[in-house]
Length: 131
Ligand SMILES: [Zn+2]
Image 1 (spheres, rainbow, N blue to C red):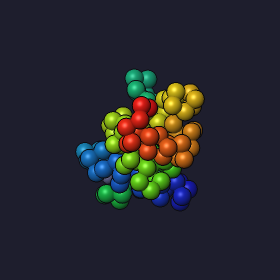
Image 2: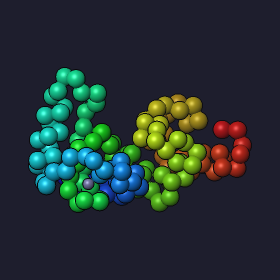
Image 3: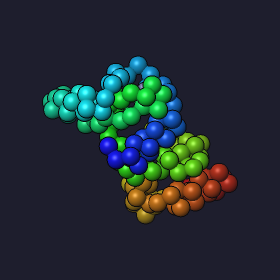
Image 4: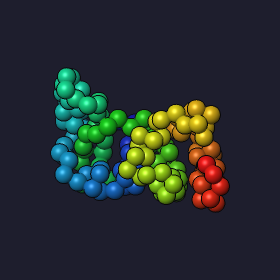
């Protein structure tokens, strides 16, 4: 894994919290082992979604979880933005919300709208103007 992506995973994982990032998930000693488990899962017909390996900021091993596009990782890594969005969007749905086309961004997915526009939305909602 690219070292920049690796760092982004660590930051995003910390923000998502130990429960969701590490918790009771299977831990793999190496990226290679996590990759094998992930490949096996992605061939399984009854899977609900594809997964990928990610490094864990808590136990320092590897887990597998939902695929996180780089845009999402970057959004989570932007200073304070994830926390701010968590105040105005249900935090448990944030991972999904950022991928759903949104009228507030002319029908763009929030992750494609760019962090400037996301900040604008946060400020507007915080000030109580209709969204
Ligand atoms: Zn862990």
